[in-house]
Length: 231
Image 1 (tube, rainbow, N blue to C red):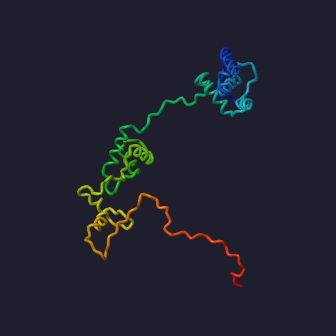
Image 2 (image 1 turned 180 degrees about the vertical axis):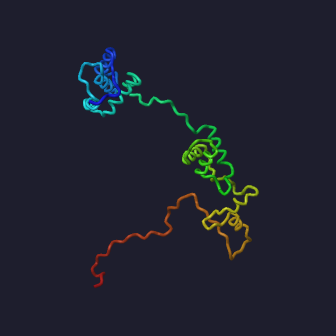
Image 3 (image 1 turned 30 degrees about the horizontal axis):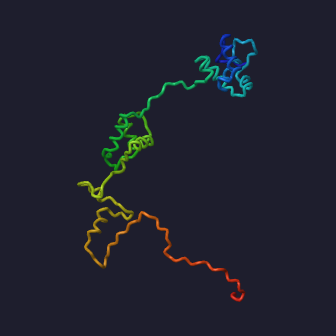
């Protein structure tokens, strides 16, 4: 039999306590009762037959890993941890995205883009933050979630129809699939009236048109007169 790494040695008082848990299960969960039974079977101070993890696992229809984990928890953390299997007792990790970091990212996103770039991208922001050592590492998707939470969209700018003063880029920016600039389109409305070249302004209605514009042709019954067919 291989040597057991984590040994369980129970005092008579602990054996009595575990026996009460296994025989008075109404106040305990099924997992607690199972772990109490495992501890009783793995007790090195008992007078019964000594069994390894695999043999005990077969008795309770669990994996040998579960038996070994209960042994380990009892050896390292005591009875309470073994009964309730508190395996994740670890200190909470502070979030790496702090308020100061958010402020740095938002300020960067709202600032002019680097030379040679039209605007900030999520990947560019992530690389910038790591280069400036605002943070050790961060993904572009995390940057995007943070900006969406703060309703920051660095690739968009809010304008009225009249652009800001000396903003030639906005005026010349294409606004249609044909590549026409806003300045070209607005210039059409300033042309003098010409009956040979009328200007039509078309827009979509905020309603859905469901009426029929062509009168429906009602169906007619099939003609079954043999004389109507040609040979």
